[in-house]
Structure formats: C-alpha cells, structure tokens
Amino acid sequence: AEGRAEAKERGEEPAHEFPVGDLDPGGPYDVIFDGHTAEGKRLGRGTEFFKKFGARVGPEGEDERSARWQRLAMLLAGEEYDEREIEHAVAPVDEDERWSDPEEPTDGR
Image 1 (tube, helix red, strand yellow):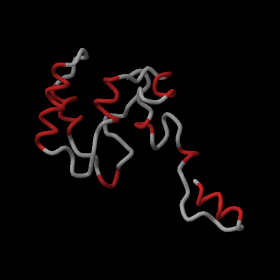
Image 2: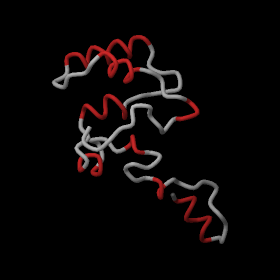
Image 3: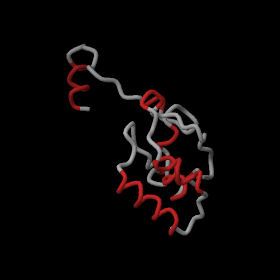
Image 4: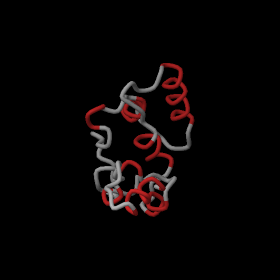
C-alpha cells in the first residue's frame, strides 16, 4: 500500500492494482467471504462454508496427509458432510478458475 501511495504522489500509476471493487459477495471472489470476515458472518457462512469452499487449496491440492486429516476432521465435525462434499473440499482448485467454484456457494452456507 505504501508503494502505491508513493507512486500516486509522483503522478505515476502503481505497479499493482488490488481487486477492491470486485470484493463483493456474489462477485468473482465470493469464496473469500467465510466466517472469518464480517460479511461472511452476516451471510451466515460458518465452518461448513469454510470447509467446503474457503479452505480449498490449489492447483496441486492437499498432500495425502493433509487430505486425510481434512477428511477425518470433517467426519468428526458437528456438521454433517456427505462423501461428495468431503471430496470436493480436498480437491484441488482449478488453476485457470481459482476464484470460481463448481459448487456455487450461496448465502447461508
């Protein structure tokens, strides 16, 4: 942020732009709004949403030890997950579609 401010003071364009205008629920970065954010809390996105959408990694996905731990944690959690949801949670994020999710997160998850 400091470098961006200095560039603006010099009348130059900053080297990097942040996607601030795109950070809205339902927008391209919707999965960031989980229970760790005020907006995600307002939308009722708790642990279930985080496990199924926000905690996914990629494009390599989870290593086998991490995937086993995630599966076990989801099976023992207070929420109920079916096998499809668990496999989705540990599946790698598509490198070309990092911010979209085929499961289409919605409010209240």
